[in-house]
Length: 196
Image (tube, rainbow, N blue to C red; front, side, top):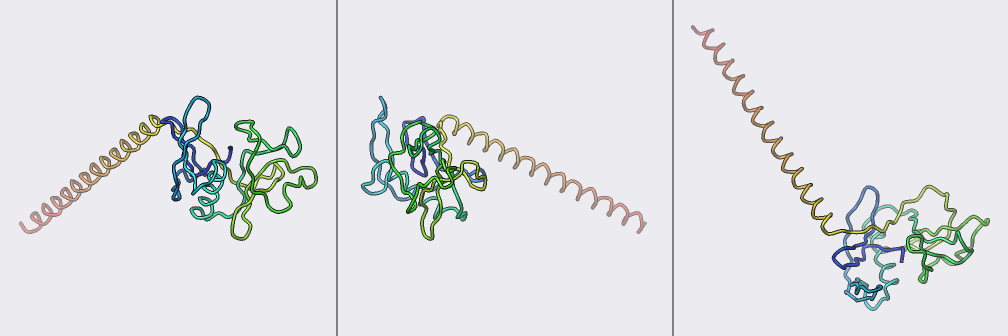
């Protein structure tokens, strides 16, 4: 499914999560771990209660963007029917979209220009809508590969940066102390010269 939210897929190499350009962390809602055969790999995935893979993914995304983010606008997904009207596929996999939570009356291809699927906040929850693919005022739901080794290396790099920042702060503090001592020495010298 192209719409993967705070649901994790783990085989020690891949993890998918909802990301926003300025926000790259997500919190998982309470979930149960389930198994799914994907090709030759047995994938573990998280789903809410007894939901299917798609329902669990949908609920995780919906819950995340509803509860964790203040933005209540449009969110693009990779689903579209650009190749064949009303046959929606996920752009990242080219597989048919088998699960949907459409707004009532959608998809409707209004004015013959609505071919991309976005999530739309309707009073209390997000639902799907087909929309003009050129509409630019939306955020994105991206599916990213999660490489544990790369992630650990990035964490180590961040820690090195934090350590360098702490060292720079220590050096800066030492310089301030030395400057303060120098000023005090100058003051004492002037005072001593003035008295004698």
